[in-house]
Length: 510
Image (cartoon, rainbow, N blue to C red; front, side, top):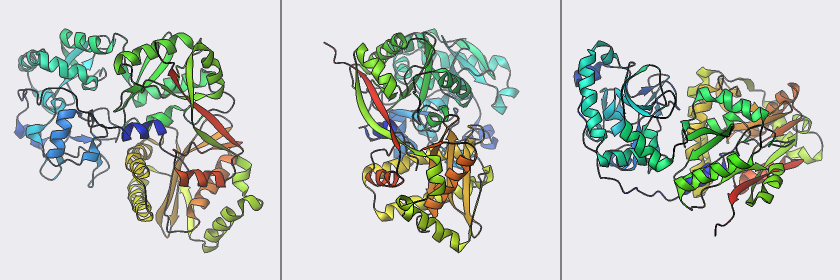
């Protein structure tokens, strides 16, 4: 019953435009001998699908990688993005799709991106997030064995290259080349020219990539904020946004003590939530729009998603334009747990049919279920394709795999509650959800083998029963992403309320 946030879907459908950058950057000198790299089991491998250490590819680099045989789906934004990693067929981790596991080599080594050429050096913000520095990564085994003087000479050569005008232009156009501060990266030199180039392009407000460790802070400001109204949208949850962080990058900053979340999409930058704080919203919202105008120009992409109805009433008198978007579907938990009465007759019959077979068991999700869930997802995708999908629905499914990977990998850390249904010992359905507040359970992801009649209905009913037993009064199944089939399915369960949602944009400027 869950769906991909519409703002991310539309960003993925946008036309990909190439930037006016040099065709290629100068090759950087290689510090680590190839013989050492070939014996290393660190680089090109990642423990999680959303690892912040995934290499970043510029537009030119992504095109070269695709020409070199890397699947174009590995690049959710061909104008520049971190590559989407793939599951390791021989282990529990993830691999760069350009990495040949058997040979231990990169298939696009001669065209590898700047991010990879730099390593084990790293571009990152300092601890105060107000200056870019060059450092060396102590996680590289080779670096531990090298004498500091050799490292510094290498860093000096790299620094000279990074200060070339064409390189400064490239880095300023791709701010994600600059990583967050890491304590285990030893700072070698400040990069004042790089810092100035980034400030000239993006302004002086410090921006931080959203990472797993930021979620408690985001969750706390969401709890304290009073802008959601009595029935919050599903988007008023930290994990709702984090699971899409691998597909499109989320950033955050604080403006006038308000937590401001931004998404960098192929179209440009937008806010998936309004500024979050305990004080007045007018000033941080105005400043956030000013920043988006600086980044996007006068593009209509500058907007704030997921404005609640009470907040829309507050913002309209300030001159902002409110555009309705697809609402969330809200149900009474007691209704969905019992499926009593004629209005749920068909769903109840399907559940009863599955129970009569008596072959299914529902269990809590465990990390070791990830491999089976991944296989089921791809099987479910094929079933959907056979039934017939339009381009938009097909795109949603392709994009959704990264969110499912994050849920499978980080369910416990994200406080997601997952369940699987086994039939004859095999996982044939799974779901993940979360507590939106003390009264409302939200269904986030749901996949069920479409060849087994009643399985999806059974999984949904059991999920609602469990939430009801834990004290849920309401079930939120998010919006329908504009998909007619999903809309019919959600309406068939008789929602007692559709939670209104709006997009906030600035009025036309004179």
